Length: 519
Image 1: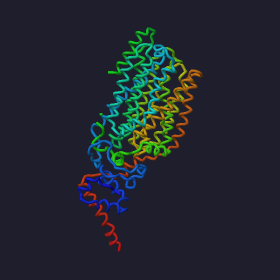
Image 2 (image 1 turned 90 degrees about the vertical axis):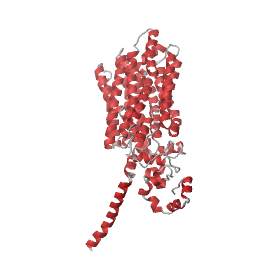
Image 3 (image 1 turned 180 degrees about the vertical axis):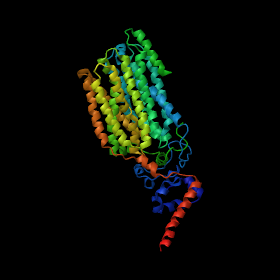
Image 4 (image 1 turned 90 degrees about the horizontal axis):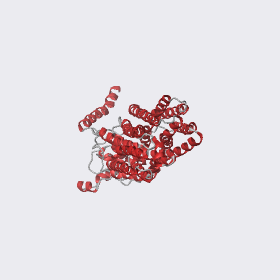
């Protein structure tokens, strides 16, 4: 039944209209009625699953449907905002700063070991704390995202990022390692507010023909920060014995880091308009998670995404150690190899995003990129110890093109498989998987490298990437968001609706005249 608001009923003086609607099943079942803005799309009307225009919305609990932010909003108009690219670029900038701080210790692992007098494993934890912090904080931050919106989450993440950078400036003495750990933990909390937002920003701000490209641009900032994190620290912090001079160089690196509108007026796509209408203020995150884990295709994607991203996290964290073992004294080139991996991956992410917007071949593209990631990892493993750095640059870049380029693909594929569930929740669960596998892979591969060498450590990753490629082949391409964009009627101006009605009336008369001629 379609329930109007109390003030609406008082204004009309009777509730007979709503009763009439409830007594006519054919009216509520017709897709052209249930998707019309005056019935299921308007914020003031209850969006019951039985009256939705798309089957995937049946998973949504019934409740009063309205946008997630306050204020009147015309959901009947589908229009993209002019400021959408500015929003995604601002997000990319502070995502870049946070990603830089994640990898700045790992890219010069041996130098920080000597400065603080700690083990390589302790320095590795400065990267792994990012992964560990994300797991328990996902649900609280996802709730905050739905409750307070993108702008508040973005400002909070940016503030924590800045605070963590300033705390690190208080750790410029060899005995102050706990202080640098505290600063890094604060930055790791900030990344919980950042990591799952690309797909959310893309869906809220961009139309159906731009959403994958926008997601790639949002991920681009994070990857650029990692790239800078590989390039800049080895240049700013040389491998010298004098700890006073070393503290000065580290301070320069720390100082570099220390020094959004909520959503557009109109929904940018039909799927997003329907998603606003079906949003319930009383939605249970537990029930949302249960529905997501009942989706077998999404569960498979969680596992495969975690395996791929976890391998990337482990490789990034341990890259300096692997390169130094085979090429002693090449800290700068180790950073440049990491830069090559990420820059190639950024290019791969942009190309894959544009390709998805044009073709919508999510399953096929994801599978091909996954297989090529495995091939690149195998080639990199076999060429790392040949003694030629230029070969390592080429093979690492080819591997990075696909391995890093896969990340935005996973986000977008997840949104397609789980629509109309929250994009923040689906991408958040992907990130939890990647953090868990990242911790396991980093610890395991680090121990394997210390005891058996780099080749065995990389073969360890190759085995799990093979498993991921096989599981990806079993994911069914249930593109729910694309179906919603195609099946939900687009709302048009009154003039166009009148013209269409005239055409329909003419068409309805046509069979009679044809029948008369036949007789």
